[in-house]
Length: 150
Image 1 (cartoon, rainbow, N blue to C red):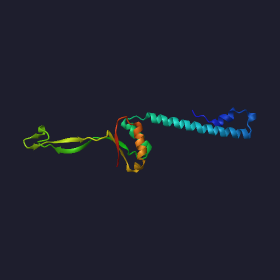
Image 2: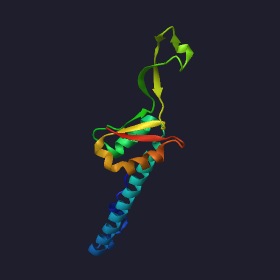
Image 3: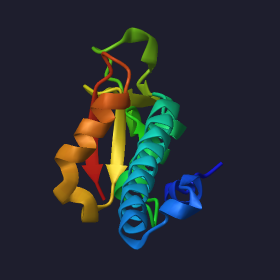
Image 4: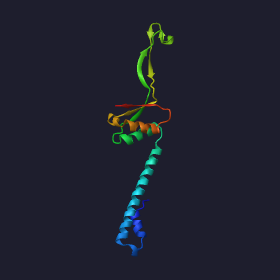
């Protein structure tokens, strides 16, 4: 429910006291109270939104996109492990992979120093400090990340 303090102050004033000067003063005070009420409501909504963000990937992505790329929503988070490709083992590397002059191929994952990678468009590269601050605020403690610009 929305309260309009300007109208409320005028309506609470008795009819015989509704003079122009007093009425103008009460309207200006009521306008100030309306402004303060709107500021408190906006702050409350922002706090509610910030508390709804969790360290889960979808929540962190949504927060980053809302703050830094609201139109296109191109910021996404990916795993730090990537498939590097195929390679072969030599006979000296591991005996079980070498069999009678035949090389076996196997996929291997390349480990990174980080737990996740944040992929951002190059248009937000100038806001890297704000992005890092936002990620640090909401990520789990002990998790490491890297920001990659596409």
